[in-house]
Length: 421
Ligand code: GLY
View 1: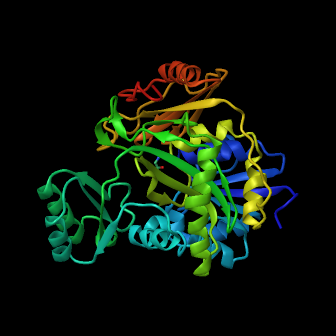
View 2 (view 1 turned 90 degrees about the vertical axis):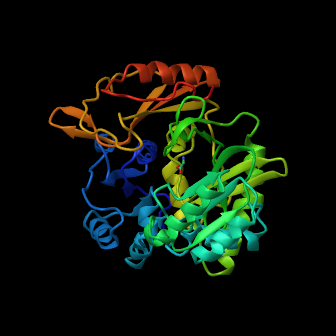
């Protein structure tokens, strides 16, 4: 039992989401040491970092045994897809994350659809195809817009929404010719969902779901939702008009029925869950599930959570979350992502980042793709840092985030100026 003792935690991952999770875990009086793999320069200020592949089951088990880890927390989806949770559980080390089989909720869109249909969860009507010819025949009798998805994990690039039949058809052909590797061996074609997107997150103990606050993500690179799709250029939380009642409704009508359906198949779902929803005229419908928290949403959500995250994760891992209530600060949060020159196609690495260490009340900076080279901190990937502003309302939170973002500099810094406007 993890309950009521101090613990050594190993957090898997090394992005902005993991820096925020690690920062929040480190506030717990029950934390002994926070280890991360691979971590990042922000996480290195909290505890030891280990340069192993977090998606290598044997390497994670060995590290956990060597460092006397009491609890492993999984940040990104790659370790889930690689079976790290299964290997760690076999080694009898507690881990917060679903099994590889249950994580098909994220790693296979056709699996997620079948679970949602069985659970009676509202989602777009869809069909699954295992060969190009039948997928193309089906496309030819549909009306635009066309929504075509590679079944498996495709680094966030496996979804096309287009009004052009030719574009949809060549995308289907590309999928089956190996563009996404095995992830494209099956294709899901579904109805277009019209409406605003909103995300709801939860922590699950197998049966109980503790819902976090709502958030809205900005996927496009440029202001006004223009430019290429990205991993997310900013976020705010909570979404006005979508408070606790909305979250409870989504937990009751979407997430809990999915967990019950998985449980009926013998799958105990323990870990984070993320429902991406569209607010259609017919009500909220599920666009996708992820078996992790969102990035960049986490960086805005966790600074407004007052509850002890380590206590909550330990209770969920023990299968003991019933009766736990989450408490929130009442503040709003805005996260502005600073991205490298050339992101998303070809981010430029190695530019020195200045202004990271200033301290400014009501703001936080989470490292995402940075590295230390000697005494300098450099860009090391596309989304470089998350700058979070907190305030009593969205305007105050946004002003703080943008003031702080303006004082961080690196060559070619790109960011949206309309987050939460
Ligand atoms: N914010 C989108 C994601 O984490 O997938």
